[in-house]
Image (cartoon, rainbow, N blue to C red):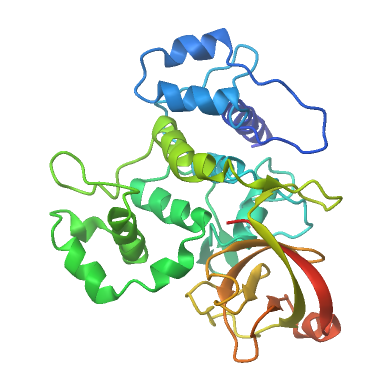
Length: 329
């Protein structure tokens, strides 16, 4: 098992890299073997752009294997790095199959706080199955969450969703959890049907296809954003900052969902949608990464309600003023 994790870590390090602000910079240039491997490949230009700009790298005699199927761990890592999000190393374990000594651990925990992944509950445990291959509908759903589109997807009417899917012969293969994301992606030019008019929701995704999605819809749109270069525990790109008052909350009932239908957990925060759009990713000083996925009757203006693991922690938080918040999307 240890050997398998080490090999997986080596594979993803050859696939992705995010700039580490404040650390010694490393020049990322495609290795000869990687360039030869990509020569004539349909995704060559965009993958080489990611290589050149240090989002993904080839190192030593390593190869990218662009036509290899991508795993869940690789995809999550690629998406975070394409957005310029450096994971925090919080000492929390949410996934039973991603322990702290797993190379993917910091990325899994960060993506979980940001609402990009939710995991699957089995018995008393939450599982991510990081080595499983990802299909198209899962990629689309995760991509839209990573873009901060969760609030807009939540506004998509189910009647519109079902009516739109009627046009596609393989509509029954689209899982319920991905129906609205798939339609949203179709409406906004993020995905399109195949040449035979099908959606192919269960088709496995290659590393090359995932890299192109990441380049087009995460990396390239984020190039104009500012880098956080403060003394905080994380580095990331952001669009704006604001000062807020923070309070905290907790629900003992684990079946309660946020306003946009996501499971409550650390990272979920309630906002005024007129100030911060639902689905937006945040970095809140003193709290860490979070996602605007909930609302509250008393949450108006520059006020944010932070979900904490226990009721006692929520009480102890009290009211904090002039807390700096970075909006990442």
